[in-house]
Length: 277
Ligand code: 7PM
Image 1 (cartoon, rainbow, N blue to C red):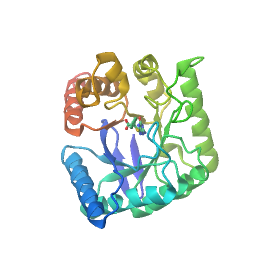
Image 2: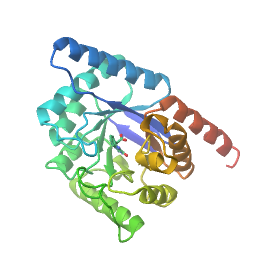
Image 3: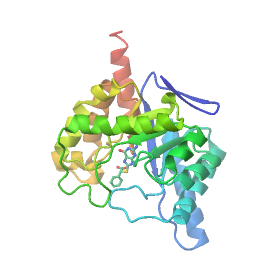
């Protein structure tokens, strides 16, 4: 299993780590802008040195509960850092956005994966993805970011998530996106209770069996905060345990804040699994 984008190839024989790079809103002064850009570049290079193979650049428009960010604002946040990373590294960059125009400009600036928490349901997003011919991550979300965490319910959790993902796969194939370009994501924390999240984590292997690379995004999420009674800064152990479970069940991309620690646990798992072949 591998991902292709232009001449780039990402081997998914072993799980890969995607490092989260949140692009903070720039201050009004130019000095502030350059400083933020510099901090973000340093962070990206640090995550790459720790073994990340993808940097996920997000302008925060897709964060649950976050206020909507305008197109111009989102472009101003993400394009400079994508360009900066490209000047310093040949790594894979994913762009966390739901806006077709951001997808286009980000890919032109050097991004090579589209990471859309709305699974290309936004205006023009399917068409943009098909034209750009880069891998796309389709994530499940129930409801909309503003309200999705108030009492989420499912008739059947597993089949609701599976049916949604299959519908989005079908929409992608219809418009000409190749099967090999599709990544699936269960959308932990997006319209799900703690128990929904852990039940989905335990069903990772069933989603892997659909035949697409699975991306798991659980790093520091509230499922660990609730289960373990831990603040955001204290969820590393929970997140690592979750990552290990996901990778053991076949998830291929782990989206995390703590790159070095996650790379280590994947190496341990790969070593152990090398004896059961
Ligand atoms: C507040 C709550 C801030 C949640 C940020 C978040 C995912 C993603 C995010 C995911 C994919 C976070 C989330 N989560 N993209 N973007 N999968 N593909 O914890 O699970 O980073 S935002």
